[in-house]
Image 1 (spheres, rainbow, N blue to C red):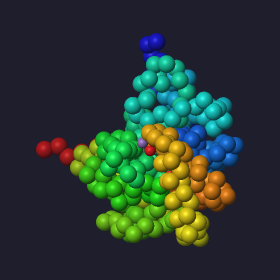
Image 2: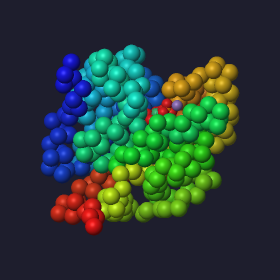
Image 3: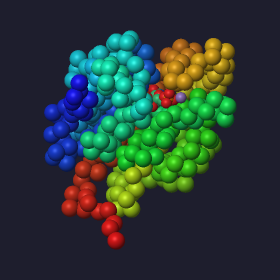
Length: 316
Ligand code: PSU
Ligand code: MN
């Protein structure tokens, strides 16, 4: 089926990119597999509207009937949110989904890759995938990390969830040459909690400093991602005692039930939402909202940088 897997960019996103207007990519796995139905559909639409309200074009990304789509129309967005047959697609799954006409939601890795392919430079998500606890035995490390190592996109996230091994994830981000910047923070955020005990080397105070950092990365010819770690305001955080209790249970149950591979993250998130009586869900949604706001501000600052200076790559 020649041509079937061409990346299709929506008219709104195409026009924005062509005119140098701000665009923010949004992932769909968080909608399909990270949040419960039917709330996930409301959130998917709200996040897009939030970007538009700030003058930024949202580009939610997914594979629909074998076609990678950048910018979904409302029926496609509904399908990603509602249809229980929507699968989770990381980078390695994309070619098969395209070849077989499948419909799936894209993870941070595959969203970043597809966004970057069409020239999108900003991406808002909730939490990044990372190194799972026990990865020394299971080798379970999200493909998000290795993909971001070779994808020049700026990803705004609230850090990684405590369901992961945060220390190991930070080590891998360093090894892979992925730039990590705290957004108005000097410690790595813990998604449900604004802070972890891990210090960051770099901190910026506003969106324009991130845009300047992106320019510098381009000038240096870097092709790795920049992770902007954006903590949740403390008044929106999960109660730490509840967090610690549920985390211990969720990890134990995953191990008992032998949950493996790409099912691990959705299982832990679902358990968290259920066992906190929905509190973690509200925290999760707020984290994504905050990240969309910051990504939109960075996209605006990036769009305002001098286009004449756009091709700044140093050539000896
Ligand atoms: N972390 C979250 N919420 C999510 C995910 C991660 O806090 O919904 C999703 C993202 O789409 C991420 C993916 O890219 O899970 C990582 O899955 P895995 O660990 O199987 O690579
Ligand atoms: Mn995994």
